Image (cartoon, rainbow, N blue to C red; front, side):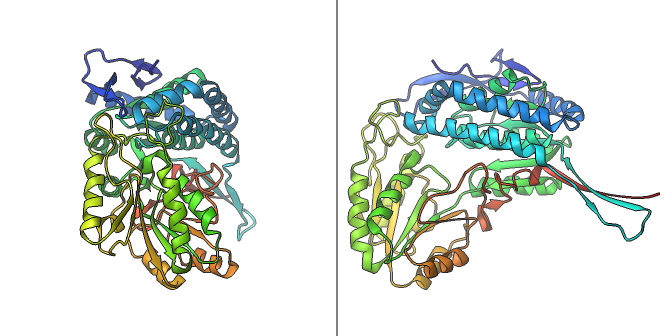
Length: 476
């Protein structure tokens, strides 16, 4: 079974009914899974109007009611996780175990936002005069336009939806047309949980057409986007032209620093698993590996051996550890990055080529001997390629790690408290993981700096982008 794809506008599920449809295919086989209806301009206007109308009452709703609905969606997520995960594997490609993990972890996001939305507090400021009262109110900003990517279709959508709804906002979300089943499943769960019509609306279409229509509408007051840096800059410029609040979680090129005082084998095992999760199609995937010379040979031997053991295959096969790339267009990009690296002196330690002729499979790849100017050291591969180089001292590693305009995630392994302090202070990134991977939890902030974005999702910061601050002063 695959999800019946549809629009969700003003509490109604709308099928094709003469609308333009887009084929959704399985990246492991090329098989057509379903047709996805695109919203017409009239559909988009209806969704915006529904969200604006619903906001008038939803902004006044009790936090307890918002909490109840979010908690119910968390429960439904756990109940329906196997079916939702299978849909993700079919249209996105990742192994079923990874898809199931994505969905079940997102139940925690629902639970956490359900509790945290009860604690959106204002404050009282002591006045300078006895007959004056000064209040700070935190109020929902209004209608949100949200845009989410294809690599974690459930995770990225639920983060934005839970934050917006928990804050008292209403939302029109355009999910990923290539991997839509998870977002449709989310809409069905909120519908079944009793969310009032118009609070959540799901639309599909040609991305730039939908984004221009939604962001340009005077009804939208907040824009939230997760995706590539170039597209994020375009949408940020459009939002800025209309003075709209925005949250931008954009791409990165995550550095890894492996110091000579760490357990090199443990670091290699952990990093080989993380690097090839979701075939490397992760914005926080480790991509640039800087390994100190004293442990370089040990680390690389273990890392390469672990990479060679990764079983690549269709995500529904039980023994598959890495699935296909989500899109055929990514295969020539991977080949181009490898070819450029080799042309500038790099060595392919393993992988480096597509696998078979069916599906979008590319072998887990490790490159060494890379020139600083090679493409893969400067452009995010967003695929299963690890670029590895040695370094002499920590100052050199930090300088190279910070040399790009990105600043999303970063990783380091060290056995020294002194090195750890220098790394956490020195790395220019919104997320710094030392000796483990502890990011992307509901209770922790997630976001980048520099070209990697504006604002955070998760943690106590999660509602900041969805609230406005109102100061009220009254004299008796």
